[in-house]
Length: 432
Ligand SMILES: Cc1ncc(COP(=O)(O)O)c(C=O)c1O
Image (spheres, rainbow, N blue to C red):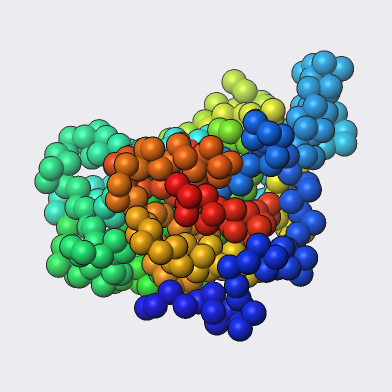
């Protein structure tokens, strides 16, 4: 696939001039959303070109008030805050399930907000990784995000299994940074009766490749295995229809494209096919227990899990950590995931086109060129002195992140990045 998407999207007007970038911003229907964020400033007081929304999204302005009002309530009412109207703390984790379920393409009852991503991954593997005789292997992509790899490796050991034998990792063909879905299908066909779980990143953290989750769910189920996905880099980035695609379970974080704040509580999805199956074992806690008996304490000691995704909750919610999530999801809902996706495709294609035009540039783009196979991220392989390159980019006010040994990730996020940011980023790369 050639890299001519931008020429198709922008037509004959497309140009490298700064004025062209400015004209795109003037015509951008989402342009007004940028002002609803605090974009970090550089030493000269100018907003940075913040291309790390795939790591930590910037602060939505409304989050200050949201956190502040919870602190006020805590000071004013103490424990009474749990039930004080309006919007008591009790049930706070359920308040955002509507917009969240729209974002991941699920029923409201199939999603919940709790813990961190890796904790949720362990909790769901506790339910879904039930090794039996021959079927006791886990399949992952390579490279797999380290925390996911640590989770599956330690789950295997937890069950007394040897990761050298039971962890199957599938990477790209030599010479191609992207992994063809057919490679997973082949592995599933070859080892089908041995694989218990296939865990995949919806968008790979390093290359930015987006996977066809519907196709891989089908292949996984044909092999008799369970399909789980890590959506850290996919939520609020690419369209998701978890229910219709028949994904068994999913976990994600809210601090990247959702802009929910550092360490924001994560999300989890469990397909309602499994919710109906009350026999699915799980690790329990009082917040996943039937709310009608939750506070009867010693009077009702039996654990009766809820029959929705919230039935996997353990602890009472982190009210303060959740406070920014409401305003953050509201912004996404107002902008609309479809319009965000459309702008994300255009921003990314424009940046790619500008980067491709840098003569003799030391830049190789690892991310697939086809917009359907990626989200809002371009991963650049920097052939010479990548750390110095990254430092020069930062001096130019362009913030990407460096992943050793030689990859710099730039993520144009549609809610707050501008076309002019793309122009400045390409200038930064050219000069670096
Ligand atoms: C793909 C992926 N998986 C897992 C994690 C770990 O998330 P947490 O620290 O919330 O457990 C991250 C964090 O950036 C990630 O990008």
